[in-house]
Length: 222
Image 1 (cartoon, rainbow, N blue to C red):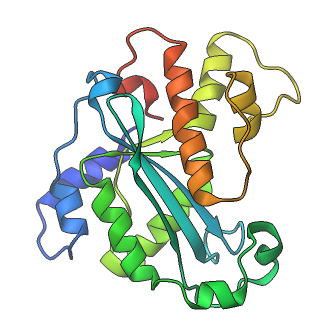
Image 2 (image 1 turned 120 degrees about the horizontal axis):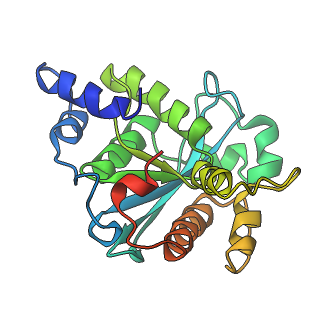
């Protein structure tokens, strides 16, 4: 069922005892699906993890930035190092994060609280949302006994739908963030930095919207 998050939020509103800040997120109003894209606040977010299995991976770092009025608001950019339950392992060679760096990071519960707070009343934007959303769901279940019930926009999924509508599915064509930015005429950024990737994803969504007409919230939700 599409928009399961909406059904779940309605259910939780009838139940007390959800710890803050999750309780406030579940009670926060959201814009209607017909709201113009420029009137919607969106949180572009990216997470670096210790692995690709959401059932066991730990968060190493997270970065996010808000889209307001259809533009990236760099004054809202935030990047945090997270102290994992175990060492960083092989991921250090990918993310440039060593055990020494992450040992001085923030406690995951405090970081999760910040993420939940910034998502209150807003849309979550991720490129290839599967791993990040599954990890956030697992963390929220552990801390709040509920998943992260928020509307999600996934730029990878959106591009796939655009190509399907145009019957333009090239075999072997990449849907990676860098490849899509190039396809939409956006500059190349350094990869494997969560804040840079979050900003890159926000810019990609704006470019995708710019190629459409009168885009509404319902058009960008997956």
